[in-house]
Image (tube, rainbow, N blue to C red; front, side):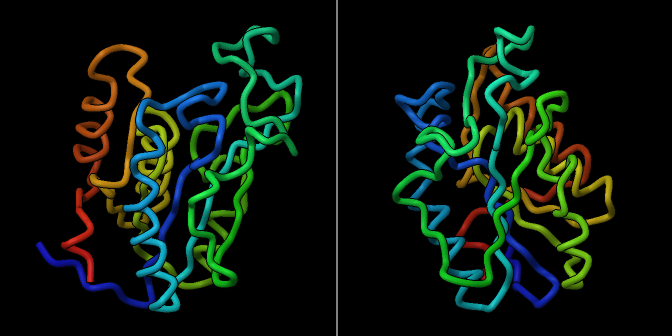
Length: 194
């Protein structure tokens, strides 16, 4: 299948932050291995003049999702810390890019890039109809961002060669991919996007 990019397309790169990389506070195994592939997607969209959105967890120190606040995760991606920074090798274009911060309120968790953010409004302002989504983690923030996009009426493409999962339970990532495709997402790889 060949997908030809148009002015109605945008790329969403989900949570490629240091705390989600090997050695981070909440690592996704081999999360760093998808950086080169994501960079190819980013350059492709950037060279076409298409918008690239980077989501990030941007939590206060007392965020509801942290274990010491009764949540399930260790503290991660705390605002203005090293762990909240993007992977150092991730290509961030000089313009035509947007940083979307989520989980910024201590009382509100957000797995989807659309929850409590301006992402939907920014996409609509630009006439975007199709979103291409990659990043981490397949079974959490990627899944919820893709499903959120579909629920909001976007056509969603899942970058199968640009995602990695946590797999808290074995098979979580595979099930997440099945859930996304079952909801109407279209799985693609880099060679298919032109």
